[in-house]
Image 1 (cartoon, one colour):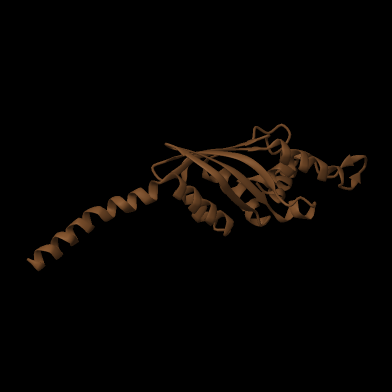
Image 2 (cartoon, one colour):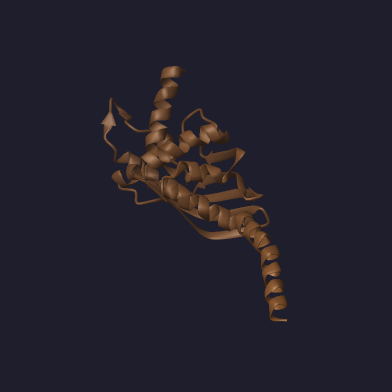
Length: 197
């Protein structure tokens, strides 16, 4: 009888374990948390592994003038994330709500560029779709308060030839986000477009 109970218990555990592991791997909030942890640690490959191959990231307002604020596919997103890591970007998700595949959070982002301007952090409304254990895409929208904080910091920057040496929207790249968004990448990307354009 004792052997039967042990065998039955082992069988139940073997049948239940894959389902539990699958549920943990597909739980939208668990996926978002693992992605945030990887990105904050600077592990771009791990962060990308939580994204669908055709993921789309949207930033409002767009990162640079004339840009649509959309990054599509892992190749474009990798470049974005490299900028975040270079800027030592850190994102924190709070007040998250989950409705089916949809995850919405308040995102707080900081990096060395923002801190150098005297801006401790910026807040965004962050909304993602998570399906089958992968982030299909997300939208990061800077809050009006964060935008005002950024504009105030920009006004304090030194002037160069009558123009502010750094424009508002490339600094928005520092939001990433995830996030969220890297100052260094935005400036490099904008100058690259100017040379190639």
